Length: 281
Length: 281
Image (cartoon, rainbow over all chains, first blue to last red; front, side, top):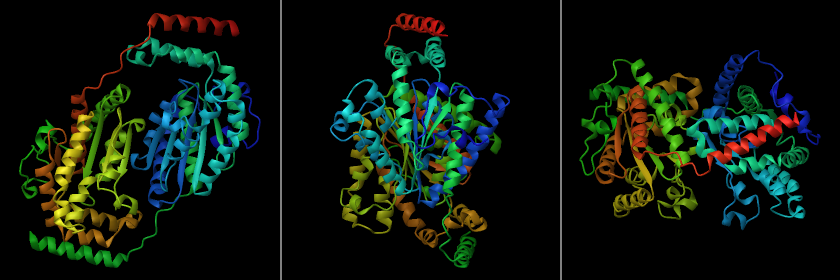
C-alpha cells in the first residue's frame, strides 16, 4: 500500500477530521503482519538514513502533533528511535520559557532545525502557536491568524536549503483517548502521568479539531505536507509512520560520497603497514 | 563479572596501555553468550534511562575516545543508540570552527552537556584538546599542560550539578586497527571512508598512547572516572560498555515522580467522561 498517497493532505484540500476514520481499513490481515512490515521498513529506513548522514547534504525534519495519549512518545520510541542516534535529535517543545516568549514564535524552533545530513524530530512544534495558543486564547486572533503564512514562509526557507519536512497528525478518537487514560489509572507505574488538565482538554476537543483543520488547509504544501494517521491502533500507526518516513528518504535518494582517494595508493600504504607489523612481532 | 571494577582507572593510578590487553580474558564462553548478555543489559539500561528521564533531576554524560576504527560509532550504533531518543543526544566533536576557536576550549563543550533527565554522548570530546592538540603540536605545551586541571574543574562543576560522567577509552591494538582498515578496502560501500591520513596517524601511535596515559593519570576522578575497554573484540567491547552504563544508572537510582494528584478525583473524572461518551453514542 502507498501510505503516502493514502494519508497525505493535498495542498489546499479541505479536511474534515470527523470524516476520517481513526481505525485502519487495511492493508494488514492481522497485527503480526503489521509488526513484520514495520520491522522490515525500519531496517530500510535505517539504511537510507545512514546514506543521508554520510552524504551530508540534505536533511529531514519530522513534526509530530496529536492530542494527549495519541502516541507521539510511542512513535518516537517504537519507530523513529531506531534511527541511528548520531544523525538524529529529538526536541520536545513545551510551554515557552520567558526568554523564548521575548522572541518571535519561530525563534526557538529555528535553533532546532536539522543541519546537513541530520534528522530533527519535533515532539509538538511551532504549530502549537496556532493550536493551543488559538484554542486557549493566549494571543488575539489578529496575531495568530497571521502565523499560518509565516509558518509557510519559514518552512519554505528550510526546504530551499535542502530540508524535507513531513508533518504527522496522530488521529485518535475521544473514546480511545479515554481508554488510554484508564490504562494510566490501572497501572501504578504510570500514576505519575496522571493529570486533571488532560480531562479539561477533552472539553475543548471540538475547538482543537477545528484549529487542526485550519492548519491542514493552510499549511500542507508540497515541500512540507501534513499526514493524518489513523492512530487508534498502535500497530497501524507505527506501520504508516515508518513507511512514510522510509518513502520520503527514498525520494530524497541520498548518495554515498564519491571515493576521493587513490585506492591503489591506500592499498600500498596498507601493505607497508602490514609488513612493518610483521617485522615488529 | 563487575566490569566497572575491572576496567575503571582508579584516581591517580598510573596506566601503562601496553600492559593492558586489547583482547578480553573472560567472562564469556563464546560470542553468543556475550550477545545475550548485552541484549539483556541494554533492556535494563533502557528501563533505568526511562526513570532518569521522567525523574528529571540527574543527568549522564558519556564520553567516547579512541583511535580511528576502534569502534566509537559502533558503540553508539549497537549499544547507546538503544537509549530512548527523547532523552539522549549525541555530539560529534570535530575540528573546531572559527567561532569555536575564538573561545576557550570548553566553550563549545559546555553547550552540549546534558540537562536534568538527559543523557549526552560525546563522540570525541574536550579531551582532544590534550590529545590531538598535544600530539600534533597545535598549541604550545605551556597551554595544553594547564588544561588537565581546567578539565577536572569543569567536570566537577557538572558533577556538583547532578551530572554523572563516565569516560570510555576503546583500547585496540595497531594490528586490529590495520585489519579494520583492510575491511574498508575490501568493501566498496566503505570506500568513502578511506583516508591516507588514517595511516599517517599510525606513525604517531606511541605519542598518542603517551598522551592518553597522561589523561588517565590526571583526569580519572571519582566523579568522572575513565574506563579502558579492551576493544579488539566488538562483542566484548559492547558487553563491557553496556554493563558499565547500566551499573552507573543503577547507582544513580532514578525514581519515578511521586503521584501529585488525588487518584479518586481522577477516577471520578474518568467515570464522568465515560458516561458522557456513552450518552453521545
